[in-house]
Length: 94
Image (cartoon, rainbow, N blue to C red; front, side, top):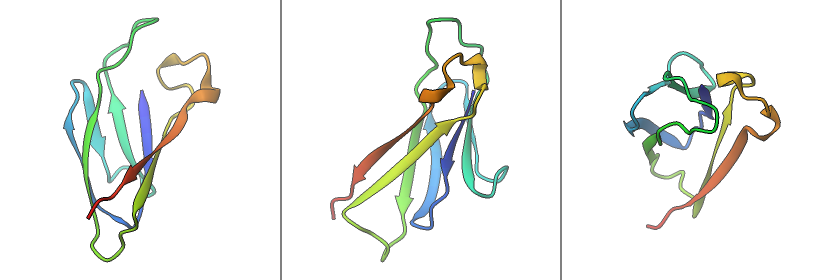
């Protein structure tokens, strides 16, 4: 399974800090951070949770940051590709 997180000028860094079977590559695609899950996921099962740590650039902060992600179409044999994107809002407290 391949998950893409768009690169954003406000992000200083994004690192994978946990998640068995997950890898993160920021160099393979100039527009996205690419998370890859290599184990086979059985029908009805789930992958392990990928844990990410990020830091935002100083001076570019707003009170919230929305991080989007999408799963590549056909990634992992998914039969319903129309539900493979989402976003979470992260509220920055200073």
